[in-house]
Length: 273
Image (cartoon, rainbow, N blue to C red; front, top):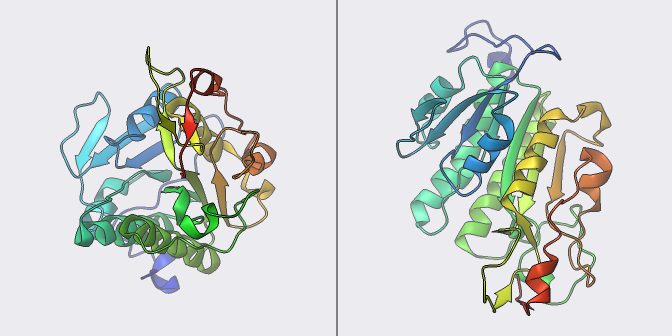
């Protein structure tokens, strides 16, 4: 549940509110789920310019500050978030029924609670494509964009992540925080391995391009955004235009540098996402 507004502005926080970072000072960035698929690439993208704090439910070996954190535990999230300027939520659990809701729904709510209590200006979330566009869309629709009514379907991962995204919307409406969600489906290398043939997810993006999008979300002027809760599709533009990525370029200044042409040139066949 969102924190009470009186608590969000109270001097009785469980930790001190961080001072807003001036434009010339690196941000102290907390990455939840730092050892997952995307986390290490976000670290590589940001570490030269910002102070990184990494967490995961398992121990992490890193030159950066690390904490072993279960995002379902609000106290642990609060402790890790102490004195940070922004939280990037890369945490995810896909298959275990209890853990999926603990991480994808409750964990997102806990991270948002900590961000609000600290007075963060923005919160960066991540989620799969079917957070918004589930199987019912993909069977028949094209030109899908981020403002479609959410229809995640009934899969465990999709539903639990979609509920986390609904918490993002609720927090952004009740508190002065901008929530920016990066919507992805499949991470892929820029070049296929030698001799590769097979199906390819058309809603794909390289790890490096996704990490660059996270940087754009950290650096965009929130005044440019239409609302305090915005989602962005991260994918390359393909001729069939089933899912469109132009919003990220218009508002964040992000466009994929890796176009993934080689995957299609060597004979990839599209799969139903």
